[in-house]
Amino acid sequence: MTRHLSEEQLNEVINDAQKADETRLVRRLCFVKNLYLDDSTSMAARRVGVSRHTGDRWLARWNAESVDGLRPSFAGGPPAKLSPDQFEEFFSLLEDGQPWTPQEIDALLWDRYGVTYDRAHLARILRADGMQYAKPRPMDPRQSPDAEADFRERLGEALTKETDEEPLVLGFFDASWPQPFENSQRMWSYDRTVEIDKPLVTVPWKTLGFYALLGKSTLIVRERTTKESICAALEAIREQNPVGRILLIADNDGGHHAHLTQQRADELGEWLA
Image 1 (tube, rainbow, N blue to C red):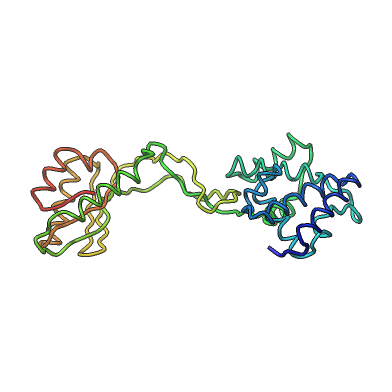
Image 2: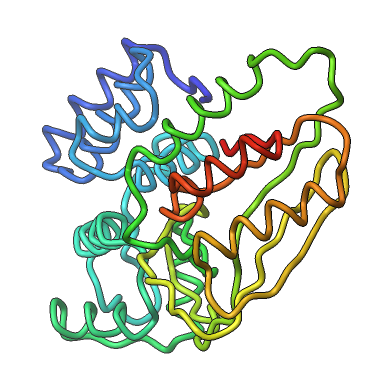
């Protein structure tokens, strides 16, 4: 950040704003003072009761124009539909409840504030506050919250297992099938990694595939993903990769780790991680 004033000068400006009853300016100057005391932007914003994104806006204005950049300006143009305090509340609600469809944001503006905005103008407002309009990543709600930790543990075991200097065949193993619902809905959020729960829909004829990072990739098609069809896929992978130890990175689907599947994988010299 740019230190336009010394700490003593900043304290004097805060005292003058308090005497002039400029409460909004005092709050923003206190945010800057927190930054002077080595707070992060998010911590400095939290101390004065605003979101990190609001703090980012205030910091940009301070860097560009010092105290004048933080002073609210109400001159010129038609009156705003929302006051500065309402905008801050609005952006905080968006941050807490993300992601949002455009229709949900329209409903929030009308239900809470009784106002409407043209979609194009609203998009400019949201982007100016740091929001992005993109497709969220769909996540199956059945996935275990410990899936990533379990995967890291199994992968570590597999990579440290004795290899007798055999060549390693490595890749991803999973089943896939057509989805009747496309993931085309874009949503507003502050975070590019935002996720939504989206249950997987099963349809006939699945593709069981091995995407090789080391070795040869393999695909087979079956009507159902049973233990038997998974074993058939393991056999096809071994047929395409006859030499070496095979490490398959798979998810937590029950068929991947069933007793029959594990037994056949051991016989074929394959390891499911």
